[in-house]
Image (cartoon, rainbow, N blue to C red; front, side, top):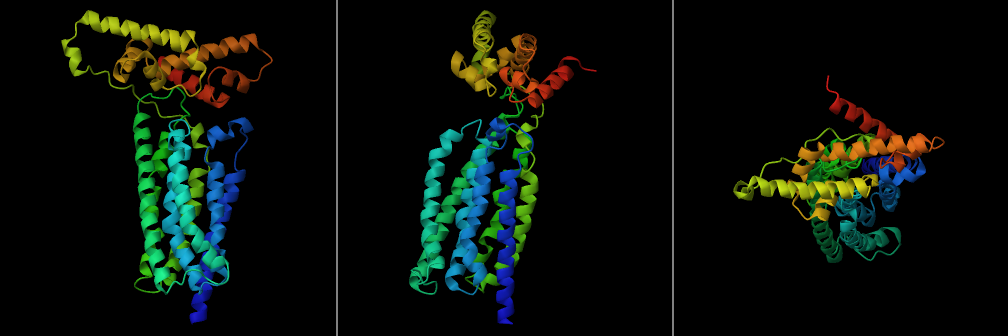
Length: 373
């Protein structure tokens, strides 16, 4: 009966690692028919996801000998220590690629180094004969507390990533972005809470081992995590960044408290200055050719608050998104007429769109906006 239990423990581990390999292979090769130069934009986390899921290879000793205490120590610590880091990194990588990924790279590297240092003794302990940690002795028990502490630290890192993505989702509800592909808001709503759903399964084997043989619990958790791997793969496979953001609304043009004390001439003068800057920067300097132009770029340049800039866009130019993309559409027509031999894809990219598909979606959306039925 005991040997049978060992058999099932190892079998469930094989199933889990196999789904990780499937996930990694599909993510690496699934790039559809998009031009190679656009892969990093559409799938910014593709390589990172593939590597992350290949890292499950370090758990192989448990497959061959699930009754080995050192292999089990590695397996049960792996999930709470690494998964929160993986989730946080991938959230920053995908959704921060257009926003603030560079801002979080340093923190991510630091978190990754902490996870690597924590896991290294466990890997050596399981892979190399002559263990350096005895799971049933004080050293192994003490290391469990270290692993738990690092896991909590990574939970904090992941929570920051979730909070940041939540902020970006709310910023995308108004027309922060000039390109409808820059922030896939609907996809963000699908996956940003994934770490919360993973949590009970990541800690199951770790915690239950204090009360019973955690490997019996982890047998079921491995199967659940395997199913979740496949579900997540199905969720992330489509190129969500190519999907247009649902039409949003401009930032509310409510006047600030100080506005109530300003004369109409002062407010008009301020709006004229902002409108002049918008025309010079976005139109004359052709800032609209930047495919990732955001309203923050205009705000930072003109020196007025976002509320005033958004209000000026709305009242003088019909909205940030509409104004920028009307310039891009006009540029596309001119460029196509001047370069008849150039492909539609190249023309779209030369006009401030990330792809011809993006151009087409914006054109159709603008038709609906300006020609209501």
